[in-house]
Image (tube, rainbow, N blue to C red; front, top):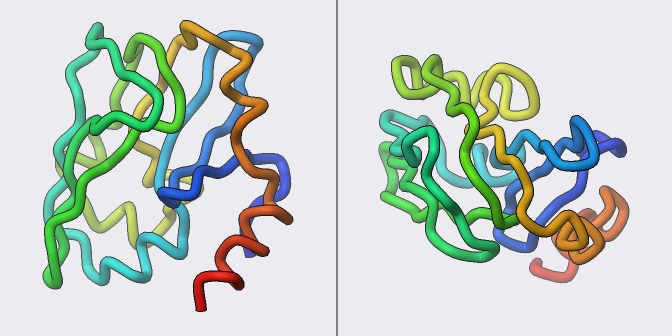
Length: 128
């Protein structure tokens, strides 16, 4: 269900390590399904700093508005403009076209605090 090459947060974000200091961030399929049809996404501007476990934006669905939390600290180097224009991408392809932001890490050791796919699956199972 969840790609094994990614890392995960308990707030249902995923992190794809692109290099020693750059990651891609999105929300998991579980989060997208829980939200229902996504109709609006708000993301930080390029150049903004985000802090680990701090609010980095909002996602709105037909059901609710939820805060997005950054799983890592660093500087936004890119945001997915396609998701802003077409929020449905989050539902259609949360691990591909529905990514949110690219971050240049300020502390790469934070990656060690994230969950593996197996740990994330166990976390989800424990929430039932």
